[in-house]
Length: 99
Image 1 (cartoon, rainbow, N blue to C red):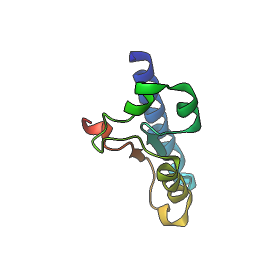
Image 2 (image 1 turned 90 degrees about the vertical axis):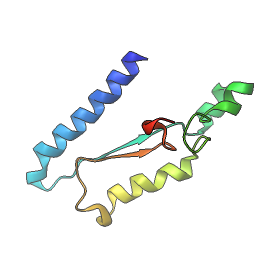
Image 3 (image 1 turned 180 degrees about the horizontal axis):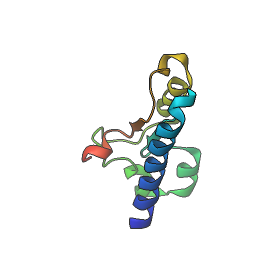
């Protein structure tokens, strides 16, 4: 798990760095950090109890659905987010704060 955590940290740091570098050119850089999302890949890869418990450890007690993550990307690409840069939206049922 340390390699996975390091990769996620590197992506976040790179996003922040790009946001700083590109802001003067009017380019916004943000990220979305999805948590456990019940995608077709998860459904086809997990079986039985593992699938049933997937996402159960989040504060909301369940995995998210793709339709619950998609609006974050739409928002960040929209004019409504024109004053948003250097941010990460954590769409993860609260798992990043101790789920």
